[in-house]
Length: 453
Ligand code: IFM
Image 1 (cartoon, rainbow, N blue to C red):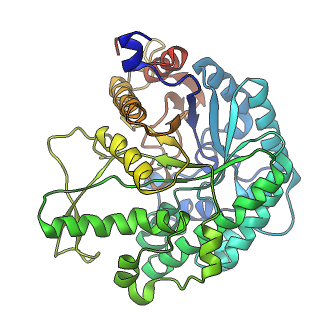
Image 2: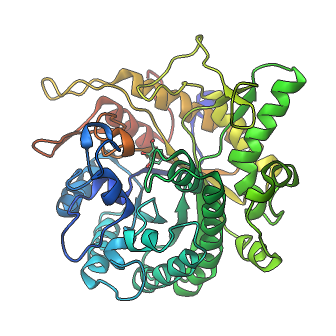
């Protein structure tokens, strides 16, 4: 190994991928027996998404999946992380299966394997069947059993070919954006409900793990969180305490029970009667051993004590010395290195994968066959360098998935935020690899950060 190799190369078996999610790209919302999801209902409710955008058509991936696999090949991807839409498989959330829905993912998986791309399937990326929401949604513990039955059906069908399984994507978002802040479907606004939802989501994960293992021999099973990398804005005791509370709310509330420690005592005391009652048997279910932890990282959280904040006196601080993306998220790659090291230090995570990382910028449409997005390339270079530094420090980081393969429906922001390494013209559905995508292709091919980038 030369000095350059040591400083830029990734481990030989490093997994290079890109990620998407069903509701954000598939479209075909009313086709082949698909049921309604909470995102269909939410996005069709006036005022919930920017411009009233919905996922009805999205990137039309349901019809264009062959072309999209060809794009993945052109990018040199080794792995593709996608999610399975529960309402395509079980239109009413439980009970009757929809064969056409299973067939779609069957074809997709076969297509990926034929293209030499390893499928990574996420079983839940926010599209709860509306029928289950009508029965109480995630705060209702029966939703965990419904999830287990859905997972059983999917893994029986695909478990012979899919080896990498992610139970849930970012349960913090499902619970708190969906049931407390109301910015996401189903748009409810009760903190107590959000805590109940988080508990059911964790239970659903725990119930799913042994089912996946039973149906998919040699499966590698994990969960993807979006842990916050929290920095107190000062060494003052009050700021430090606010940062620790935020860490409890965002991180430890999920990580501690997943790794067998139950809910953190300090947060139980803070939440009081709002906290869900969790039996020892439920906590044991949640702590089912996993093989890896998926980490979605975009930006850090700079936290201060704010007596004016109704939310546990926690305040966020903007840093004027940092660059911000089109989401108004700070560009801070050191946060990724610090986060990966913290997770390894504090929890028995097994392997770590960055299952999402990327940036939205206001890309101009293609000109002369080029989508120039130097800021996104810079973001990827900085964050991949942060990954490399974590690996050099001994973190068992085994792979990285760019978010996202292509521009798509960015939830409440509709189509206004472009995260793709592939540009999508939503009028014609034409795709074009952005300059950042070409840069990523070179990086994958070299298994190293390009010298001049
Ligand atoms: O688009 C989302 C994705 O669905 C989940 N993680 C964050 C991304 C960017 O906001």
